[in-house]
Image 1 (cartoon, helix red, strand yellow):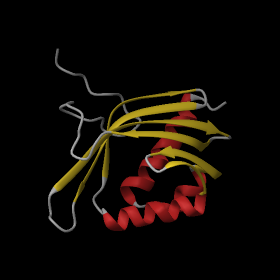
Image 2: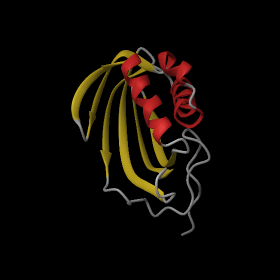
Image 3: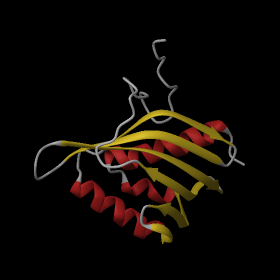
Length: 142
């Protein structure tokens, strides 16, 4: 079972894949067979097939950002509460979707994920996101 530092390093690399297009890091993040449960249903994808999906998403949404508001990393699991934000390439308008995602980690790699997304246009009301996916959530005014 990975410790918290191992999980932070894994998700720091995963953030680089998403935000910097570092698709060369996918093999160090994703298991050879990755089980995904999302709006399209449940499916198993190879890491290469998933890297191709991410490459296409990044080509369609070059400025996509995953804004994380809080998370937990523990044992062989992690979860995130986030808003995905990007600029529509046709209209130039900002688009967003709020979501929650949980992960199962096996052998130090992302092995399975469950993604729940709110309708297009949704966003969490938090005024500030975390600095990075693994940093502490910002202090909220009470």
